[in-house]
Amino acid sequence: MELSEYLKELKKIKMLNIEEETKLWREYKINQDIKARQVLIESYQPLVFKAVMQLKVNDNVMDIVQEGTVGLIEAVENYNHERSVAFSLYALHRIRGRMLNFLQKEGGAELTYIDRPMYNGDNVTTLGENIIDLAPTVSNQVEQSFLVDQLNHAIQRLPEKEQLVLQSVYMKDQDVKEVAESLDLSTTHIYRLQKRGIKRIRGMLSNLMKHW
Image 1 (spheres, one colour):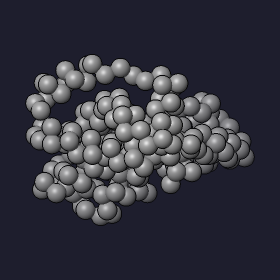
Image 2: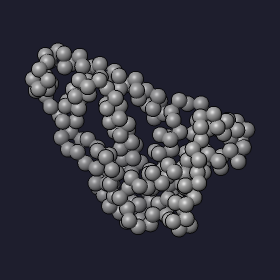
Image 3: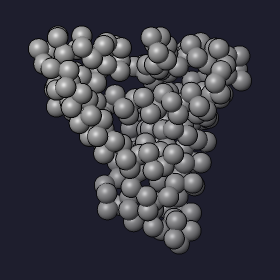
Image 4: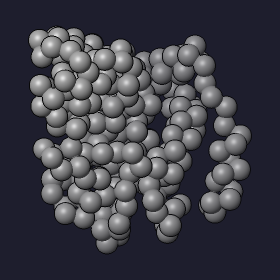
């Protein structure tokens, strides 16, 4: 299939509502209904295209789409619909892993995930830079990148002061005393904000972390 044809097919896809999706998961997982499986795969195909667009690649786009679709199929087959983890989060992990493995096999193509920073002490690198280095494994890189992305979203949902403290301490690597001075607060207050922020994030990510 050509890219233009693929995009036309994507436009025809309608999003499932919660009731429809819940019914399909039950029909597939409990009754082994193959038609329900196919509907789920087709309905989540836009997730594959979304993952492709997050990669800076110019060649082999449809090959990458095909690999991502294999990842989507694997996700549908292995997903536990009774868990509280959203399927879209679970599936993206599989889809991206398939795509990155394909790109590595094709010759270590240079690629980068948009807005996917990976932190290592004072150094900030992108997923693409780590892939070229080939260590750690690609699957570990995908997982780390995915979790960092979820962590960033969680931090953005915190109250302003807690968000500032965590960003300053953990992302900008600032000393607690320096953060306290910049916010005109005591170091004790900074530690309280830090502890409270971490507790909130653990709550936000608790369901996600049950999957790993």
